[in-house]
Image (cartoon, rainbow, N blue to C red; front, side, top):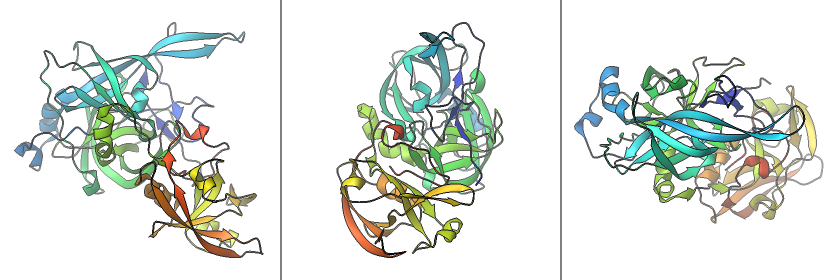
Length: 413
């Protein structure tokens, strides 16, 4: 199986005593065990602005969109302190700066960006345009598992024009899109392209899956993270977040944006402050498809449970993971566990289905999970329905389970 490498990319200024570098963190695998080169781009939609005929019109030129919307795209700078270890095994702290993008979504000074842009910040500032004054911003709310963060700045002396949040559910492949951001500290840069695919899935910095992601060939690079992806009406339809590098150090024409509908669903809670946590079942699964036909499973589609973390809702409900490792197509799959085929009467055909179904619920809600459960008698399975009361997601996937992910695995929640 081919290993896919996705990267989250903020632009990182040099740590004290070093040159300017682009730091890259793998968006798949163990984010904390290795440091890789990553480019982060993110785009978010603004709080719905008042109805303006210009936002509903068709066929605005790229220049018109840039002139109208670029002043609402901000340069975000995060002062960070990182731990490092000397050759003699002594730990020390180094100061540095991360930078990215964000955009105004409310005239009260609310700005939407990516969580990874401000994640390790001891101080966050934003500025409007080249040479603009740096304004200290407060991180109001965050959802690390969706890579979203809301900032707020004082509005005295400022006239803010919130971007209009669009509808990412109506986006089509081939639709023209525009990205405005600050790649490599080059402020308010415009790039254009098209939506090249829909319903992609990427991994948030804390290891959880983000679903229904938009894929675009509009060039996005380090520093674009947190900036808006716009349609031809100048509406925000996504937040630029990650790129596919195919083993290189830069953009190869495949970028990913978190859909604005994902952000809009959480904005009311994010703007109230604190951390937003989605629902959590506590399983890791792999999609059943033709690639697993050699396993002679009782179904041709579904979510094969790989692991269940002790003490999670899935564990308490009696859902069990695999206990036998099988080699399939060059990859390892755990077999002998339950197969999830439905949630609350809705058919589950893949790990992505399961992730979306759990994501649609809130912590504290109880769901009915339909299983094909191994009987232990040869290849026999029996159908079961179990109830699981969902909890809030842990701070990171690594803290909820151990082990590496097999290709195709999509931990829910």
